[in-house]
Length: 613
Image: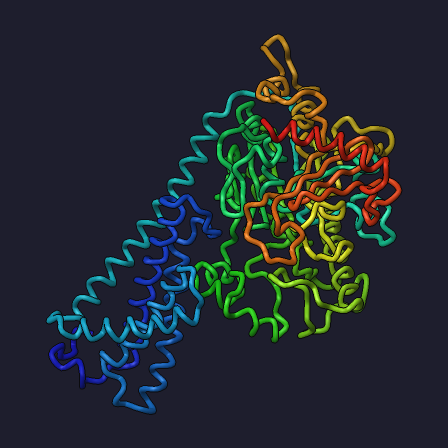
């Protein structure tokens, strides 16, 4: 670039190499600007950005690629129309793309961003032309400065993470050599009623049935919330969602200790490997207590969506302008989604490098989450599979309008995804056995919430508290294997999992001569009475902006098992009572019966008493 006559930028033609180098300069500059904007949002505004620490190099790389693509187009045009290949002419389309990418970070429609980008670019180029500067020298010098910035940021971020992990491992206290490992697995979005171990007519969980032939199955386990973040937060802290900070854009704060913190502070090596990078990633606060927390993958797809332009093109962002195009082409997969096999491999690679110290590991499988796209051959296990290009249910902001045949396809694919997860669980157990880790491991398998398939007029989750949305599997296998499978019929809230796990650990390593048991330490902050702590409350926050057709659009919802019935109080104040034993799908509301009215009155008092505090 320096060989050009900088006084004659309006007439001297740029070579293809110079056009592409200019595009690369814009790409790295815009990428760094995106890193800065996301940093402000995350650290100054305390908002979740949904992108991992790899953004420091992924965003610049992604934006370089976008600008190189534009550069190749400009090179092609310069061959057809040589006169357009001057510095100022090439600068305008690059500036438009730069402004467009940065404006996408604002809460305005994408086409409004584009129009504004065009205006800003023309104005900027006019202003820059008046400044007497050797622009090629400036670009060359700043090129190296920006590359150095990316390198330093990347080294700094990875060094910090390594140091924190190293320091945490060094500070672990000694632990009883007989302490059991704890492997805690969440099957994201899996409802209990679609598992054959719970009586489902399809053989969706043959491996789980083998694994837990000597385990414990909770028949009526209830999630604390019908969507991921508050449910996981409740599972890890033992608190109800209304006691926690978690919301659609707010992470879990450090008010209450987590199960991972308790076990880490007792000497456990703790690690998590998650596939739901939307609401179980590190920035949700669920990472607290984990020495290793592996969320976002390093992949071409992840690099692509690290830029906000990639997020829109890939339909990663709701209402992204690439959604319609991708859906018409039959592409519905969530970009950079990790499957269960990848999660297993991350865990196995990690545990194979550990010493004899017992571990607490959390795995999150995301395969049963919409869009339901199990891999071959599972995609045709319970039906003919999908027809490429056929309309598919994808979470969005309009009600389900498909046919009964399409609905059945969704259920077929959902069941197939569960069967795929089940097969991967079987592989995982075999690997643990080969590594001599299985026999001394407490294995807990559950789900954060269920899924609706129009049983109550809605699809997906986070829109009701009926049993399909909150009744989940809960299966526990301990080193002290019972002779036969044990089924627990009583309702059980997932918020009691932390205390349950700690009590199981205490059975092996509890030593009162050294002070209180680990489970006793956990209960010191529990303020509920015994009766209240046994409630299976499920909640849905009213703090989310929802379309009118959502059942909770008038406010939050609460439910729990009361007097042997399931009580639901809706956001508009209406109430529902269901005999969930006789009516497991909760289709017959008993609120108008004399018994229902009496039960509702008692349930209302209990709920008001809890929320009044």
